[in-house]
Structures are given as structure tokens and as C-alpha cells.
Length: 236
Image (cartoon, rainbow, N blue to C red):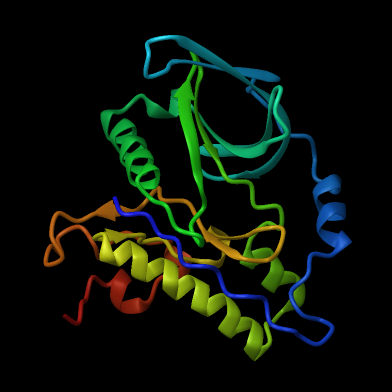
């Protein structure tokens, strides 16, 4: 797939109260009850390089930074390197059905093919006896959902700044016949310098042609869906 190299826009100069991450977020995380973690403290990724040599990389698990219906996300430090990634961990107990396995494989294949400045970077994936690990770019400032919850609103320049980045990412996806199908504030991650990264391709689909519509309309997060989507009415 062609690579994308356009430079990202600059964050506008915004009056105090603009997008920023405040200490309350860390305080709220510390007040949550401890989570049961079934992930080793050190995870091994053993693979073969192009010459057939075995290459081993170790990831040291850090704190949990998020969770969904089928996965948990942790900070992982690559041992021996000054690199921290976000690791999406899927318990194999949730992959007993063929449909669940196919869904995860589709997510990996789609995300692996993408390279865009406003889409979460894909590092690698591997598995052990109990989990599947998907290593991704770490977005330190959580998501737009947390930002809006804390701030209650965005200013017009802020909305334009984030909107331009989101539209650029969507244009890239649609030019490659990929539909995300689950765009919401919780899937728009924020980097350390407050740039958007579109993530979570669990419901995404790759159309064979631009005219294909049979797979693109009825996948959604219920609370973010419109009435016509829930009633299965379309307007095209």
C-alpha cells in the first residue's frame, strides 16, 4: 500500500483553557480498584528474520491504560531499547469461535497495512499460550472522549484543528477502500503533542471495490448511532 508522508498541521495558538491534560485524570486512575491481570510481567516475541535467524524481543509490562469488551491495553517497554509501546492484549479464551478469530485477524491485517500520520502506528503482533499481543504506537494523552468529558467543550479553533486531522485520515482510509465503522471520541487517541491518532479497527472492513456496500452500513456502537441506522433505513 502506498505510504503517506504529508506533514501534520501545527497546533494553533489557543487561549488558556485549550486542549491540555490535567492532573485530575491521573488521580481518577489511581482511585480505581485494582484490576485482575492475566498477562506476564515480561512477554517474549520470538520470530525469524529474512535470513532465517531467530530474533527474540522482550517486552516489560507496565500499567494498564485501557480496556474494552475483548481486550486490555497496557504500556510495554521494549527491553534493551528506549521505546515504550501500547500493547493490546486479547485473551485466547475469547477466541474460541471461528468468527472471533476471523474478526481479530481482519483487524490485524487492515491495521498492519496502514501508514498515515493521523492513524495509530502498528508495530508488530505475536502470541503465546494464553494471549494475542498487538503492539501499537503509544498515545500518552488518552482520547478525545476524556478531553471533552473534562473540558465539556472544545473551542472553534480546537475543533477545526482536530477536524482537519480526522478528515485527512478518513480520506486516506476511503482512498484505500477501508471503512472504519466505529468512529467515536473514544477511538480518537491523542499523542504527547496533542495530535489525533485514529485507532481501534476492530469493526473496520476492507471493500473489494468502491461500489461494494453490502458490508459497510450496519456495524456501529449503539450509543453513537442515529435512529435511521438502528432501524436499518438507508438513504443511498
